[in-house]
Length: 227
Ligand code: MN
Image 1 (cartoon, rainbow, N blue to C red):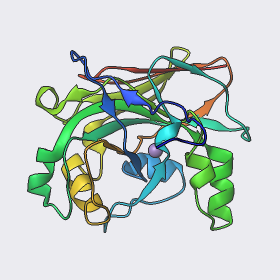
Image 2: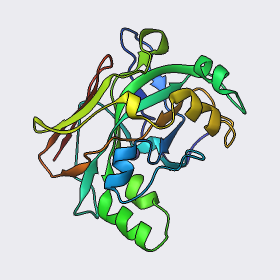
Image 3: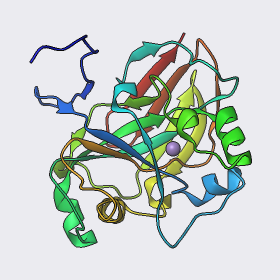
Image 4: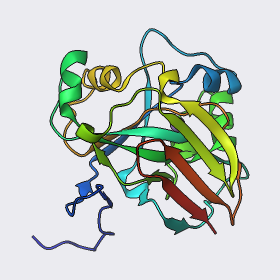
């Protein structure tokens, strides 16, 4: 079949110590999964169930990218997050079975136009333009699940070397298997789906020229430079 026009090559993620890359199907993101971050945003953690927004796979970039400061914001924010990468189909699976469909983990940056998000909240409008930002989903190399188990590892981010976010994965309200199981009640999850599991407290503004470095102990770091 011939195509009317060409599109950019789909983004893939590198996997540590492997040559094959991980193709991205969808990007799901969890809202308010750390109590202290929910409080700094003037909200509360919802203990009844996790909730989500999405980012376009075409907006993903690999760690190490240099990207332009985005359009239409005066308050662009970093959010460092543990990323869950799925390696198998999952629909209505139990928390116990959820670990079995996790391919691996990575460290990611959920970049956010905070001013647009604030306006969306104020006007009871969707978050899409605040969260689904071009070049706004940044992913470090993935590590296979056999080589990493989320526990109380440190998660942090530095901007130009200054520590901005510093917490542990134990602060997450919903665990990775709980998130996979719950999300599998809403979607037919499949290999290639990514889940950004929420950010700890300390989110803040970045500017053109900044270098953002996110890290989770035991995982490859994630770097982003804004021009
Ligand atoms: Mn986030």
